[in-house]
Image (cartoon, rainbow, N blue to C red; front, side, top):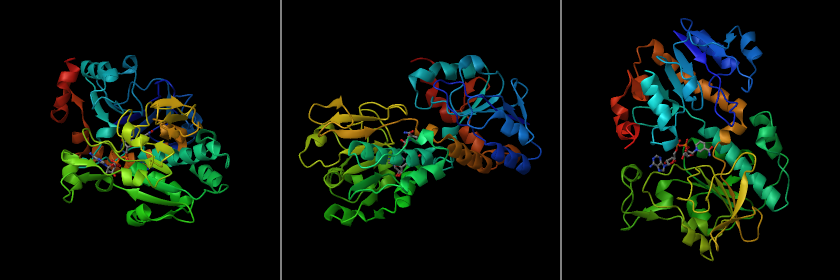
Length: 400
Ligand SMILES: NC(=O)c1ccc[n+]([C@@H]2O[C@H](COP(=O)([O-])OP(=O)(O)OC[C@H]3O[C@@H](n4cnc5c(N)ncnc54)[C@H](O)[C@@H]3O)[C@@H](O)[C@H]2O)c1
């Protein structure tokens, strides 16, 4: 079986790749029966020569491969019929802008496996870039703080070589005495926490966080059952909440009243209560003045995120009174960082981490008869049809 690392063709260009040259060599060692080839690319973070040096064929024609492995959506005219493809297709939530892509894959008899649908039996994701989004997002928030309050200057992550350089930059700054709130306990939140821990910011329990002021910067990590509560006052259940959040309301305001910098790293499920609304942000005691919204749901659970921002221009201000966008450093504004492609700022580390997970969880499935049913669960299309698990996409495909 031949696997091809394909060139990224989406614009703006994404420099990430599923396997670094080292990880591709590792994959080859682990699976000697597989053949790996690389499509030549001038934008990939690792140059063609680095793969050639490891002994891999780099070519402009990968049409002989069976399995195509990429990161972002493949343009319709670049899809090769009758192949298996792995990439982030952004179709499983019926995203209107990618309907044509899914249609094309059905027409071209492509077996689509989405990185997002590579999950355990429980549905939790096995691979992704969440950690890197959390790392870059938390850093970007501190960068905004330094710029806005004229405390220090941090360079943009995209100008740094890797995570080690990011951490060295953080070693040069001193964080003022602020209270930091981090929502979520998943991959993004753990990435953000790595930055907080690297800065040696003390973690405190939510009870202490809510009731005390400190003489040093502190952070508190909260999960769904902290920032939501049952309306009837009874004790909530996280897993029941995931299935059906009716009967719950937001419990975020007590935190908003004692927080300076909020890092949003949670997953927001449809119909769950908003963490805070535009009205909540108008409350005189609403203290948050800086938000790194890594979760980045627009005009939703974090009301100040009125649009995504970009790596080129990552910060804007939100004026709670007028509900309008203002300068990121305007008086009384909430400074917002809402970049929606954060891992692209750290392409080397993000690619390395992704490759490791792909070797561990996905490649073995091709050679052990898919004994953990990884491929079976991940497969969206087969023989021109949606698989059973993804049959809910039929009306989207049909344009209904
Ligand atoms: N801005 C970016 O560039 C970027 C990049 C990657 C991920 N993200 C976003 O960050 C968010 C978190 O991603 P992650 O990789 O940490 O996810 P994850 O699955 O690893 O963690 C999810 C967290 O959210 C909580 N949660 C709340 N409601 C939930 C629900 N209904 N179902 C499942 N979990 C629920 C969980 O308890 C957990 O703490 C996602 O919305 C994702 O789209 C943004």
